[in-house]
Length: 81
Image 1 (cartoon, rainbow, N blue to C red):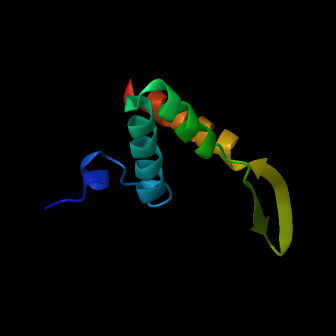
Image 2 (cartoon, rainbow, N blue to C red):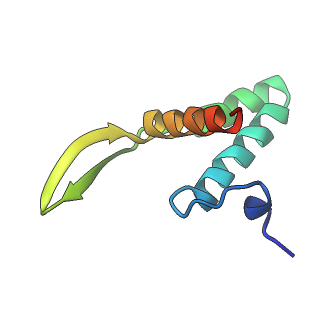
């Protein structure tokens, strides 16, 4: 039996399981009634930042939420082609 995240087409090693979890969490939050949904959405907000290191030097700090949203939009655009 295949894992659900593999069955959903999330096969790129960089995005597999974390993206699946993000999508699943969003689906669950959207299915809740209004008050619990608002509380769950606040818990789901991210304030994390990351930087890519190359040749021993730190790159630009980027927002994880912004990068994740951009990757999701890029993935959605590729799915329409």
